Structure formats: structure tokens, C-alpha cells
Length: 425
Ligand code: LLP
Image 1 (cartoon, rainbow, N blue to C red):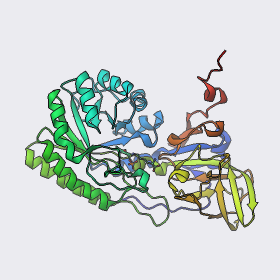
Image 2 (image 1 turned 45 degrees about the horizontal axis):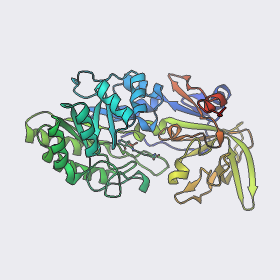
Image 3 (image 1 turned 90 degrees about the vertical axis):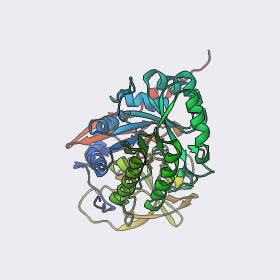
Image 4 (image 1 turned 90 degrees about the horizontal axis):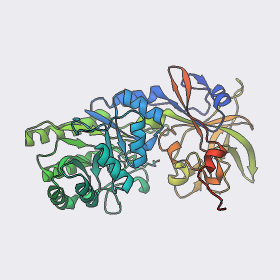
């Protein structure tokens, strides 16, 4: 199991490079990713036959390229993510012969562009609705697909990240497998695998319940199944006291299930896992500058040049991210109880809040305007959920590898931001 991180409220470097240097070179706010952490997390999962990266967590081309070069397959949830996978060097499975398709499109619907891409490039579809099977069948009969099954229960770090049960729109309802097989057989479609993903940021107890549900669904689909996917959802460590899931126990449960299925059908079953957060969360640091230190009655605020336009997890889910101040010198500063917020014209633009929008002050070292503050464990669902709210540009992204910091996305310019807008003549 990975060694638990120790979070500190001060930080001088990221991946061996002084934070001050990174800020000077790339400006703020900037996302900095440490490639070594991503690769370490990937190697934690080596027991599985295939690790399929859920790129929605952080889809910069350089991150995709890094993971591809180290053997990860990729999941795409939109036409845009299929294009990204292709642009990062993943091959379309043109003749359908790959034992595990390099790119899988997992969704509950096909929009017309995604359907066109899947048909033209023979991208494997992991179907989350009967309609997807029907629509693909009409265009490309005879294909192999997998079924994403909603087992009737789910779990996540927030209600908004639970993707199972009857309050969730995701997946084919477990009682509709027979109906889906009928549609598939009408078009000569082969169901080659079953996939379940019950939610993001869940725990071992819930993840292990999926094995039993998977066994039942696979039995119903039958011997055409050659692969199973445990989905994503592995939690990561966001605060002191959190722990990693026991990965060998997790793999053990899935491997035992795989063996039972192999015995039942008399052929090999490949076992996939589909993490997003686990691979990239800890690698990402959002470097921001403190632009105001403001007292409002009883409360002290550190206001940054980064807001929920850069990192939306606190306002969306009340998520906790570790934070650290970059000291200017060796003087030890007293800690202050502060609320950390951004520049946006909206009261919810607070990084220290709990679900429901309750402000939750944090102890951080005394700091001045101009000092840097680092929001940590921000690599997953950080940059990708950014927006141009308040007409603020998307942040820059930097990947540090082997001691070198490379710009992997230029900060958006004003011209980038208004590209495509038209004032009618
Ligand atoms: N596979 C499927 C089908 C998924 O829907 C997801 C996440 C994953 C894999 C990857 O899950 P992970 O391993 O990252 O937990 N924005 C939220 C998370 C939304 C997750 C959506 N689906 C957050 O910031 O926590």
C-alpha cells in the first residue's frame, strides 16, 4: 500500500522545484502536476490486467500521453474525450482485434458526433442505456460492446458522485439485461463484457458489494463475456487521517470473481479497473497568489487570484483540499484561523467550506499579500471542471518530470476566451 502523505501548512517546493520559481516562470493561478506521483499510483494497480484511465479527471494531452506511454488504456465519455485520446497517441481499434480496446467510450447516450466517431474509428462502446445499443446496432451491426450495469445500489463521497441506484441516471438497470440482449442480438451485436461503476470516492465495503452484483449480471449475459471492469471510484487521501483502500484486498476480491467466471465459462476473462481520481488527484497542486488579507468582523480572509472558476470541488461538494503557504524566509510564523476565498463576484467562492456552503475556517501560517498559497491534491476534477465565469481565463498547466517543469497548457488569453463570439452587424 502507498505510504500515507504528511500534509504540512507550509511548502517550499513541488516535485523538487521551488514554488516561487514555478510562479515566477508560469504565473498564477497555475496547476502543477508531479509526473512521478501519477506513475507511482499507476504502478500500485499493476495487479489488474488493464488500468483504464478515466480521463475526465484530468484530460490534458500531456497527462494522457504520459499514462499511455506507461501502459494505461483510456476511457472517454464524449466526442471531445475521444478526440483527446486520439490526439495523445491512443490508437483506434480499427479492425476490432485488440484484446483490450485502447479507447472505450462509456456513456448513457450517444450524441451524433460521438456515434459518428465510434462508428468511423471502431471505438468500443460501453453502453449505459438500451438506446445506445439500438443506435449503434442500426449504424454498425455485428460490433462487440460492453454493458455498463447499474446494480441497483451506489455510493460516493457526495450524493452528487453516487452513480448507482434508482436515483442515478447512470448505467443499464440491472433488471433490463434481458431486454438489452434482445436488442443486441437483433443487430448481431456481441456483448463481450460487463462494467460497473457505482460512484466516485467510495470505500472498500461498497466496492466489494459490486463483485456479487457483477457475478449475477455476468451469469445473465452469458459466455460471450470475455472481460469485466470494476469501474473507478477508488478513494484517495485528502486529509491527515484518511487512508488508502487496501488495494491487494480489492484486487483479491475481483481476481477471485474473475476465476469463478473463468471456471463457469471455460475461457479467459480479462480484469480491468477504471480509476480517475486515484491516478491523478495527489499529483496536482494549484498554485495561487494571496491578493488580499482581509478582516471581516471576527473573521480573517485570505483572498487568492484563484477561485471556483479554477477549482470547483469545494463549492460543488464541500470538498476538503489541503493547503499550504509558501514562506518568504525561515522565520516561523504563527498560525491564524482563516477563511480562504477567491476573486469571484459570488459569496460561495470559498475554498474552505463544507457541503451545504458552511464556511469552515482553517489554521494556516500568517501570510502577506504577494505570498503564494498552494491548494493540494487538486489534480483530479480540478482544471477540467474550470470555467470562464466572471470572464477569467483558464489557468496554465505545468507537468514536472525528471526535475523539469514543462508548460503543458498556456494560460488562456482574452483573445482565446472570446474566440467564436460575434457581435451581429
Ligand atoms: N468510470 C466511470 C464510468 C465514471 O463515471 C467515473 C467518474 C470514473 C470511472 C472515475 O471515477 P474516479 O476513479 O475518479 O472516482 N467531479 C467529482 C467526481 C465525478 C466522477 C464522475 N465519474 C469530484 O470532483 O469528486
